[in-house]
Amino acid sequence: MFDVPLAAHHKLIGRWVEMIAPSDSPSTRHEARARIERTFNDAVLDILKPFDMAELRAVVLQGDDTLPPALVLICDSLGQLDLGWIEKSNVLRETLFANVAPLSWRAAAYKELVGTLNIALPVFHFDDLLTELSMYYWEGEENDEGARHALVEWHGQDPEEIDEDMLPSAIRARRPDWMLAENAAPLKNMPPALANKIRALRKAYATLEALGDDRGAWRFDIELIREYVDDYEDRSGLPPVTLVPFDQFQRELDDVGRPGMETGFMDVCGICQLDDAEKVGAWFASLRIGVAFLLAAQDLIDFDPAGL
Image (cartoon, rainbow, N blue to C red; front, side, top):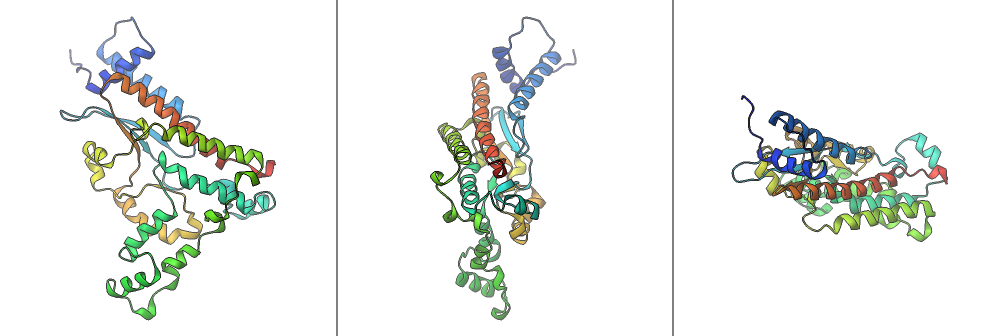
């Protein structure tokens, strides 16, 4: 008698549970609630289990009188993605891969990740970093002349004391060669094993992109997110994950990431409102497509040139 009725999100997901695993056995509301949550969680974990490049989790939002329940996909990872053989960020990797991973291969792989990953993961790359820096340091300027003017006029710096290493051109020049798209090799100049991984990533990306603006589990709508969770009004707009290497840009990443460390990052991969039970099934279908794309990216990062 002390049990409460099933909430709207339990009813919607419960109808989906009955579609995929119908049961003729009667149950109390407490048992039904536990079965619904267990079935949903198990299904999500089963899809996400092969993916370990970043930590993802699904959250069910109850909604209110004006907002229906919603499913939100969150990224709990923070910092730089491990780029493996592409980055070669330590001496051991340099030793192992020096003769088997040409710069052109690494640049090509990095270029593909920069151009595709943010369709699913909350991730920022070098151009995003430079935009953040221009607002943080130079009042929106992105060239040396404008940056110097901003530092003098708005920040009161002595023109003779401006740190030349922190001007836009110097920061751009600090990029390692594998971050430069012009160094990327065409697929025809790569070994088939690597070229096929890049083709697989492009194909998986196209499949996810073909879902359209409403990509189910991967639809990012900041205004809608803020309607459901007030906390996101005060958060930094910067994603929590980056493709920019800390080895070369630690100071810059620390500066632009400070607001996120204080108020939280924009860690949402996607939000999907639940209008009916069929929407839950569509959400799972899109979740599988997005994870297939992320697994293709993970497979590219896990490529082992030493095995060629």
